[in-house]
Image 1 (cartoon, rainbow, N blue to C red):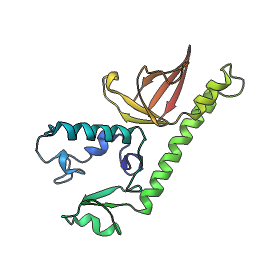
Image 2: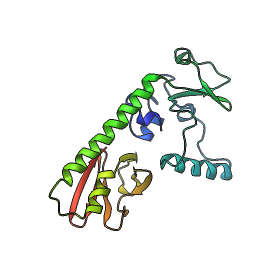
Image 3: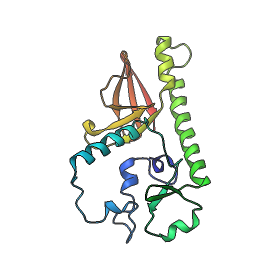
Image 4: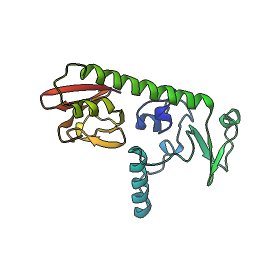
Length: 198
């Protein structure tokens, strides 16, 4: 999640996980993506627990114990790339690394994202709008982050503020998530559509 908010990495979670797979020898960012082992869960209870944790992280209902770390590795290996990253933070058997560039890039990326959505909302519901004041206020407060995008619209999931939505889900009693695209979402208010870029 930290990488997806950092300007040096892809915005989409799956793209982050599979970045460099097959493109350069040993270039997998996460070893499980290219270890040739099965990804079938072996322990149903552990799988369900990890699924619940992932949902909390994706929906923004968790704290980041790494304080914005972008890199990590197990404590029983010593990768060359870690030597230039400064002192790590230990959590269990893993070491997590962050740098000031990562934090700045994350903050800049978040600010750009927030600003572009706000600007579009303000233009869409500008002065003289016939929308109810409460709807204008809600539209101005929307912050959109795409989480999962696929060719089938039923598989698309987006985070708006801190909650997760599928295409067609109601946002409020009068606002609906009309569509999710690769670079924007469209919110419907009755017969009006508002586009929020990612």
